Amino acid sequence: MNAQESLQPDIIEVAVRWLLEGRQAALATVISTWGSSPMPVGSQLVADGAGNFAGSVSGGCIEGAVIEEALACMRDRQPRTLKIGVGNDRAWEVGLACGGDIHIFIQPLG
Image (tube, rainbow, N blue to C red; front, side):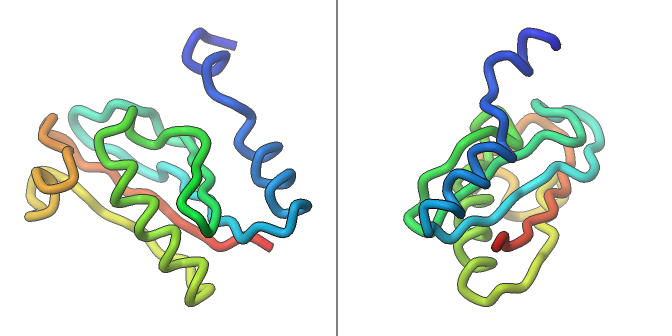
């Protein structure tokens, strides 16, 4: 386990605990990156229906956009892929000004 892994909670354990508590949840996973990306492929974030979250898919720069999509995913129960990058108008808006692309798969749980 490297230092980054030791700082992150076990996202699956958090997700299971939240589901057992009766919370809605969605899981976001980095599925591909290009260029400068703060978190590697496989990084995960879990969000609940109130917007609480654990984990990270971007080191903080696009978590807000990911949580918004996770909330929508919980409402409509449809998985989706969020694509943000240097060619995307939302890149600066959501904080990905580091010059890379990131694709995040978001799926409802439970």
